[in-house]
Length: 425
Picture 1 (spheres, rainbow, N blue to C red):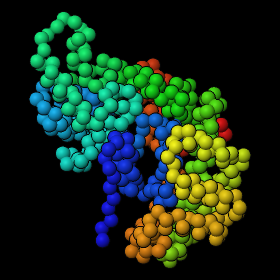
Picture 2 (spheres, one colour; picture 1 turned 135 degrees about the vertical axis):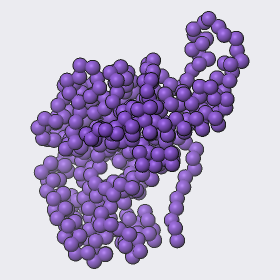
Picture 3 (spheres, rainbow, N blue to C red; picture 1 turned 90 degrees about the horizontal axis):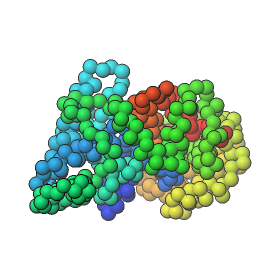
Picture 4 (cartoon, rainbow, N blue to C red; picture 1 turned 120 degrees about the vertical axis):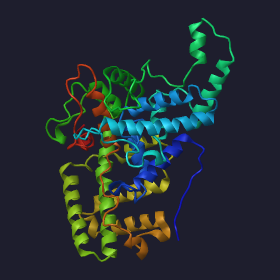
């Protein structure tokens, strides 16, 4: 029997989140086996607003508005504009592939549709639509199709009006629904292009992102990017001492939660390995749990952690975290505090097993042999990074293009630097 799931497509934000969930199933290290996604996403949105797991490169935030405007120009209807937009987006794929054809330095990574080409189902316009709105590069609160309908209607109305010398009237009539600060696409956009931002593009994006992400970790990084050396020293040396107290609290709780809940994910995989009678994997996960416990102790993650404040911080930003999720997390934290070795704690083992059975029912790997046989030896064992990996790439694109920028954010070996440092903030 084939399993499936669906959702009511009535809200753009909910639809984007569901698409992210679907993509997470493709990433072995980030699958949410224990249902802590609502907490992970709340911290992610608080730290790096506008980002999603689907984003690859920052210049798409300009590519998409430019292509939508091209598609609407001269289109006789919204349907025609939609068809033209898809053609334009396929042309962009080819232009990006061509732009990186002779480069071997990895800068071409992140081309959406590089393999699928014209068969790509989820185009960049869909992937970047939410971020465009959150960063106020898009001014109309509609879906992509709604944007095309509104734009076509405005252009149809403008064609029936008498031309006027009033600039204000012209601007209002030709409103595109985007605000890019006057940036125009390069002349060779759809022939051969790259993700390298022009200095003027980087400057506009920096200004807009600073304004729309103020108060978040992303906003703070954008303000201090020219003075903070993310490559220097170890992760523990990175300091948020100059950051606002509220931001330091969020980072601190997010960091503690990421490391603590990681133990539950490792224990879950240990239980599956035991159920599958795979002694090598059993030993592997016992070793990883031992390493995890050592890190919890060395970082003093549980010391002085105000759990009431944790839930307050989360509730302020998301009042819809399910009660069973909170109950599970509280019970897990209690189990960690009460046991030196959670892998040998009947309380911790039953807690994790019950949580997975509650979420999956008959498809639980711990009770369903066929489901267990599809397990590839690892699922959901990655530390939560709250989209820092995605954000790091976007910051790299931005800072490397800024005029007079002394450095760029290149921290391939330190994806968890900011979050690891949170406990020292």
